Image (cartoon, rainbow over all chains, first blue to last red; front, side):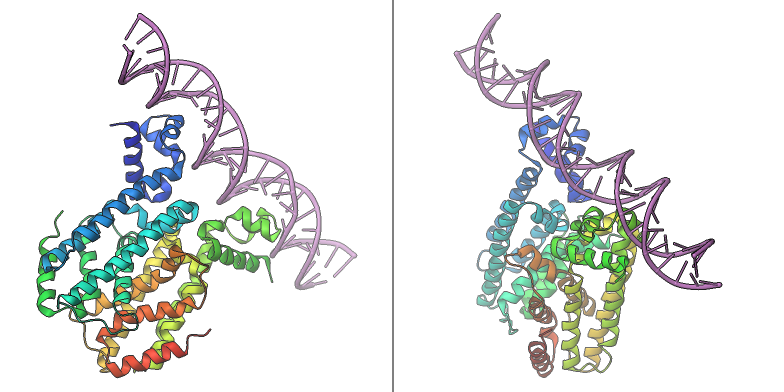
Length: 210
Length: 210
DNA sequence: GATGAATTAGAGCAAATACTCTAATTAGAT
DNA sequence: ATCTAATTAGAGTATTTGCTCTAATTCATC
């Protein structure tokens, strides 16, 4: 494995386990036994490391939202989509806890993130709309309608891991993601057709293992 | 105003406007035109400043959750409760964006926050239970029931401001809190009695000015 | 107005951090 | 084997940050 890859991998591990602030250049080069010059040969600056990691997350999330949920949306596919999205969040969990700080220090990253967010919420709205079209969901009547449900979905998804990290009685594990998916499901559940809901919930419980 | 109060006030302002990391001791003493020795006379260390601010938030939130929502819960009181909780979050908004970082650096604060969170979610569950008892809400049928609704309420409340900060196209304003209350309301809305919902939503729209 | 306590000033330290610069080494193609 | 480009080492810099320590000053009270 090249030093570049080792830097990325260690950065991700460090930041996942101890927070985004733990990915200092001194620590990275220290643990890797390489020189700072080496790190700065591969990356122009510290921010660039985070950007590369974010781009991976970005790419994967777009894939999840597009590939997994084509019409018509079956309960099984829908459950798989939820679980896969939480698995993704788990692997890049450093991002969620320290997001605001990261964006404040890096305008380029901030712009990229916001583009992803706008697209993501729009896509969630589209998916909910598809469920309505399929006859598996009643259109939410609240002020915001589908948009509001999509936004709440995004908010819970974005913050489930952070909630666990903040609550932090114990080390957070991949298994906790199934609870997150279930929690997220309760946002949509009141609008779902009972049969679809039952079926999706069963799939959600069955498919949770990694 | 005493220097102690000036330190607290400036810390809150700085951290609210530029993030928790902006409240450095050097900057505080610089802008206040006082000496570091002075600051450390009033506060044992940097963490203590944040703790004092958190204690204020803690105290106020407990007051909001207890005082505003006594049985039976009228739509108007319920709307006022939502708006007041967001007003509170607004005034201490630094806390929400940088929470994880703050808790990681200060175990004492972490313990206090977790106690507040446990109590808060429990209280939200109690309030939802009261709405059910009053006949204004049907009991949620999802896996988590009332608990799940309470948790989602907490999550949206905790993260609405952070969402705005992260989205950050423009400076976030107190008026945005009304949107947050409305967004939060959509979590509970599907379970509410239509008459209660209409009435509460009207109150929510009417009472939004500061 | 003298005395002791509360408050403030300010120089300065120790540690951490992002980053630079030059020189050395390695790898790959010819 | 040699030449060139890619990679790495490592010493060193500039800045920031939280905090300490002592001396000076203000304040309240008798």
